[in-house]
Every structure is written in C-alpha cells, then in structure tokens.
Image (cartoon, rainbow over all chains, first blue to last red; front, side, top):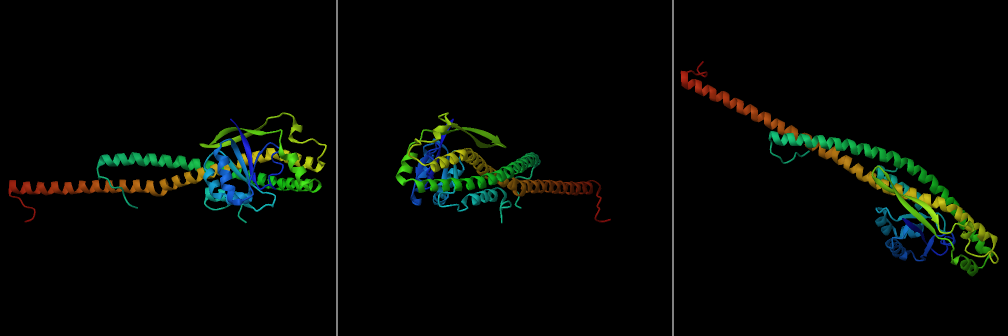
Length: 107
Length: 220
C-alpha cells in the first residue's frame, strides 16, 4: 500500500518540503488548521501528516480524533518560528497516559 | 465490597468458582501483557526522544539554510524554483504487531530513481545556498519518516497500555474480590442451612422418643 506524506504549515515553514517530494498544504491562519488537517486526513492518501507546532496546537481537537486511528500519523515539527517544545510535551503525555504519571521526562 | 445478587445454592457456587478461575487466569495474562507492553513502550520512547531531539536540531539548521538562501535570492525566484517538484516521495505502509497492537512500518519509495531529481530547478539561476538547503532537507527525510513511525507506535501503544491497565485493575480490585466474597457468602449460607436442618432433626428425634417411651430429657 503506497501512500504519500503531507506537510501542513505556514508558507514560511513549508519552504523546501515540496522539493523533497512531500505534498505541501500551506495554511497561514491557525483557525483554518483543523479544517486543512481534517480534509487531508479524509482523503486517506496520506500515511504521515507533519504539522508545525503552532498549527498542531490550534488543531488539537482534530489531532486527538486522529490519534486512535492507525492512519494517518500526525507528527508536530518545529516550524520556521522556532521550537516551542510541543514535541517533547507530547512524549511526556504518552508516558502520562501509559503509566499514570510522567516518570521519564519530568524535570 | 458488595456481593452479587445470586441464590445461595451449591450449583451457583460451582458456577461462580469456575468464573473466578477464569477471571484469575485472565488477570494474570492481562498483567503479563501490560508488563511486556510497558517494557517495549519505554524502550521505544527513549529512542523516540533521541530521534526527536536530533530531527528538531537538524530541522532548525535546514530552516536556517533556507533563510540564507532567501537572503541571496529574491523571494519570487526562490518560490518559483521550489514550486514544481520532480520527485514525489511515497510511503510503503506495512503494519507490525507488537503485543496485539498494530503499529505502522513505513518504507520510503521515491518515484524517480535519480538522486539529482530532488532539485526541482535548473542550477543556472539559483544560488548554491539553496542547493545546500534542499540537500540537507533531503538527508533529513529518512529520519523524519522514522520519527513518524516511532512516534505513531508510541501513541498507539500508550493508548493500549492505558486500556490494558484499566482492565487489569478492574479485575484485580473489583471483579475478583466480588467473586471471592460471593463464594464465601454462599458457602456460609450453606453451612448455616446444614446446621439448622441438623438441629431440627435432633429435635424431631427427641419428640419421637418421648412419644414412644414416655421418656423425657427435660425431666432428668
């Protein structure tokens, strides 16, 4: 089963991703992020959807809906505006869910 | 702990004992499943953390490289050179079963075999900074895909562990004690019935003896 990869981000962050063969869905308004993500997921042609951290937070409700499905994988990445720490917080969240409290990454 | 609403009969007790046995066996198996899932999850998570730190650092470098490129090229030129891509990366998706959790396995397939195809533009009008930027992003791609695979696995496994943990807890703290107490209640009730019928028989025997021989224990 061959699927594609998508990247959702603001026009500054998506630069270059189309060159390496990733479908770029640019989205400059955080309010539209969940709609863009939902449309991308509904098409069922993407196995992995990367999304910038700002838009990830904006579309968190949609992200949580997709979390239980095997497909697609929604992965937050730092955008052009720098790292906001959403990625590592997400890992802590996994530990919290599995163990009950964050025993691994707690500082 | 509340006991179940059952009739205190021997048959019911046998049934409950069987159910208790099944519950105990299920509890043991689920506990084993939880422990093994947890072990694999922790391993995977540590790998995930390392990979994410690496990818985030490299992505920042890529982003800086693109900023460099946009400094020496005009915005329009940069955008138009990246507008059309020759290459499209596909993902071959398989699934792997880790303790009954289906996790995805991705392997990248690029549609054009030529490595130079990552540059969607001719080299004549673009700066070498752009080449660098695109190349570093291309080198990052396998790690990005690996990150997606591991992180999705972690996500799915954490959900499964949560579910299993709840099942284990409900068996351990609710179901099994409830069975045990109900069985105890029934066996006590049965013993009580036994005792009461025995005393009744003794009493009846006394009464019969008294009637037959005019014999009375009370007068003694």
